[in-house]
Image (cartoon, rainbow, N blue to C red; front, side, top):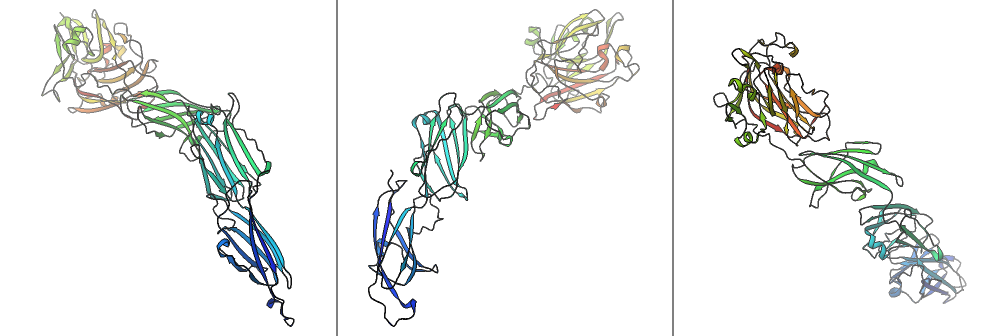
Length: 588
C-alpha cells in the first residue's frame, strides 16, 4: 500500500490552574493548549514534505484568535485560550484552498477541540495533500514515431489555470481538486496528427493522474483510455496509431498560371468530424521555410477550390491542404505536399513588328533564319500574291509607324492580265501552305505557344474603303461598308488548324472543343479610326485548367477577306502588340 504523508499535530490541553471559585462569567474562564507536532511520511502522490506549515486557531464565531505563519519557528510552549469550542487549521503556508497550485503541492488538515474548565484535552491534526497531481509520460517507441506531442490540462472552473505537457518535458503539474479537462495532440513523422479530448469528473484531493502514451499495434483504432483507480492513482494509457485517423486530405488538380494557381482538393474522414472553417491551403516557394495561408474560395460537400494570387512567373512552389488545430497555430491533419511551377510570361514574338525581311519577292515579318527554316511565327497572304509580284502586307517606317516599324495591310486586287481575285491585307500567326489557283489558299493557323495571357493589347490605325467593291454572298457583307478585324485564340490542339478558303473550311471559334480561349476587337471599333488608337482585347477562357499548345492572332484590313469580300481602298496599320498576364482571366 502506498505511503501517506501525514503531518501530525498533537494538541494537548491541560489546566494549569483552576478557575476561581467565585468566577461566574464563563468567558473569563481560561485554559491552555500545549501543541506537539510529529510527522509520518506517506502520501498517494509521493509528494515532498512541506517545509513551512502555518497554523491558526478559530473560535466558534469563526474569528481567528491565534495564528502562526511558521509553526516550526514560532511555536509557543503553551497557549492560553478561553473555554469553548475551537477549530485548529494547519496547512502549507498561505494555502487558502483555491490558490494557483500548479507549481507545488499543498497540504492541509484540521480538527475541532473543546477547551473545558479543569480538563486537559489532546487533539491531532493530520495534514494531507490538498490538491491534485498530474504527470505525463511518453514511452521511447512513441518518441521514435512522433515528432511532436502536447497534453494540455485545465481546470473546468478556471480556464486560465492551464498546464501544457510537451513531449520534450518531464513536467509535473498540480491543480485544485475540481473537475479537469484535457486535450491531447500528436504529430507523427509523416505530418499526420492525432487528437483527443476528455474530462475527469469526481476529482478528489490526493489524486494522481498519470497520462501514459504508447504506440498502438498497426491497424488498431484511434486513442483508447484505460483507468486503474487503485489507491487513488489513476493511470490513463493512450494507445496511439502510427498512421493517424483515417482523414483524407488530397489536392486533386493544380492549374498553375504565371502569377496565380488554381487548386481543387478533397477533404473527407470516416473517423473524425472535419471543421470546414479550419480547412486552408498552405503554400511556399520551394526550398524556403515560411508557409503562407490562403482560404478556399468554395467548399461544396467534400470538394474545395482555391486560388492563390501574387505568385512570381516561372518559379517552383509547394502547396498542401491542411486542417488547422483549435488555435489555428498547427496543422491537425495535412495532405501530401505537392510541387508546381508557374508558367513563363512569354513575350509575343516580334509583337513590335520591327523585324521585316524579304525572300525573293515576298515580305515577311520575320528574321532571315526563320524564313530559311520555312516556318515563321507571323505570316500573311503575301506568298499567294507573289505570283503577281504583290505584297498586300509589308513593314513601314515613320511617319506611318508609331515606333520603329509597323505592319501595313492594304486590301487590293491581285492578278495578272485582269485575271485574279480580291486579297485582303492580313497578318496572322501560322504558315501560308499554298495557293489553290485563283480560288483560294490553304493556311495553317497557329504558332507554338504554351503560356496563358489574359489580354492582348496594341495599337492600330484603320481607314475603311467604304462599301465593298468585291462581294461574295457567303461573306454576309452585301453592299456594307468594309470593316477590319483583330482576334486572338488559344488552342490545345496537337497541330495547327488547316484553313482552306477555296472550300470554305474555317474554324468555328464558338464551338470548337480545342479552342480554350477567345477574344476579338468589338464591331464598334472595326470602322475607320482617327489615327492611331490603342485597344485591349480580353481573352475569355472556356476552361481554366487546360493549357494551350498554339496561339492564333489574326488581323485583316477587310473582315470578309476570307470570302474575297472587301474594298480595295481599305488600309490598316498595326504596331506594338503585347500580351498581358493578369490575375483575373475572364471565364465564358
